[in-house]
Length: 134
View 1: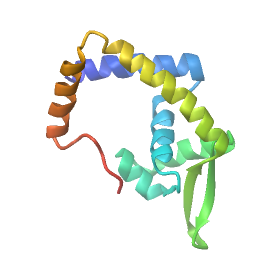
View 2 (view 1 turned 120 degrees about the vertical axis):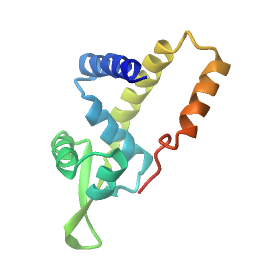
View 3 (view 1 turned 90 degrees about the vertical axis):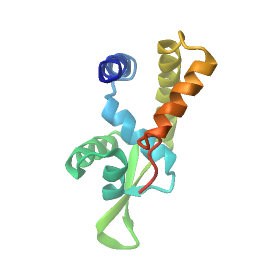
View 4 (view 1 turned 30 degrees about the horizontal axis):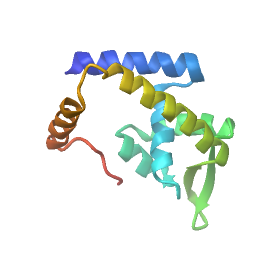
């Protein structure tokens, strides 16, 4: 299972890099923010992605610099900011997500719809997938 996961991630990483000049962590951060259009505070985002605050902060800083994410203060609290995709960020992510979906579909073309449904059901039984919001 781990070998398969690594192979799939490797292919997705390469596709994101060559077609969008993006990384998989960047895609993951944007995907999380796309699911929560009202935004998330960084600690929520870190927990959701199961990575450190430092990892998320670096990616968010680059996304803000690129105009894809905006930071706003949370209820006037200077210590806590909410991050969300900008309109440009939404368009950029949706373009990547469409391509990502096509790549995943291509990877799994050998599975029948029933096999794919059974695989998804088994993965859901582990309790790991899908992740829920913090």
